[in-house]
Length: 314
Image 1 (tube, rainbow, N blue to C red):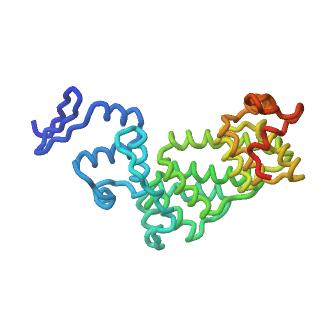
Image 2 (image 1 turned 90 degrees about the vertical axis):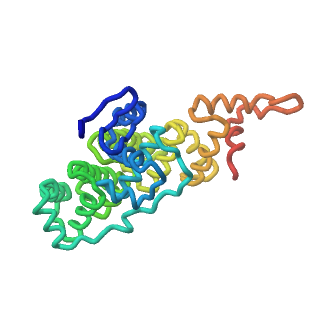
């Protein structure tokens, strides 16, 4: 039965000159993940059956090098590939191809997805795309391999991010869209589902910035990029706004004003003591005021800065 698919317990075999086996647990993980690029990469690796270079994979897979890297990370997360020690690949935006006017004309003529994407992007950015802008858009679509519907979500996200950071009427440049696009690619965002998950998390985090800023006595403005980076670190370390407020009070006490670097130094030392929430800080303060052991005196009563002096270099 030439070409017939034969199903066996634990394997999927194709009756050809060569047979390719696929473990059932691997098939289950790939199906549940819904990651098509990861499935393609896994099949290619099984097909080679040996060590293979990225260049060889690029020749047999219909996806870009960056998408291959993202698929590799998915397979590692699914425990279908080991995690070798490796450096983060350089930003591929530094190596982007140059699209000529003829290349762009060909995409507009032959590809409906790209043809529809151009006016949609122009509408979101509020301007006519120049040749340089079209080259960037073509790179995201053709070289990076990002589908048109995902690029549209990317552009909308960049517009919303510009509005939230700089105010109404501000629009991102295509260079900024490109930079965020490569970030999405490195995160493995190549379909609407993964984009929706990312955008939901971003919206939730963006809403929290106001609470952190208000606890730092910063009102009626969005955070600038440097401030966002600090707040992102604190959220990643598990500090709620109330704990940041405590560190802010100590910062102002010692520095007479808000000093982001100093405040960040306070917070970065707290996880070593297991302190993240205000309640944990209060418990730590109480413990610091009790004799730690026989022969050691307690901290002076009412000394609420005792816990902080253990973690601050003045």
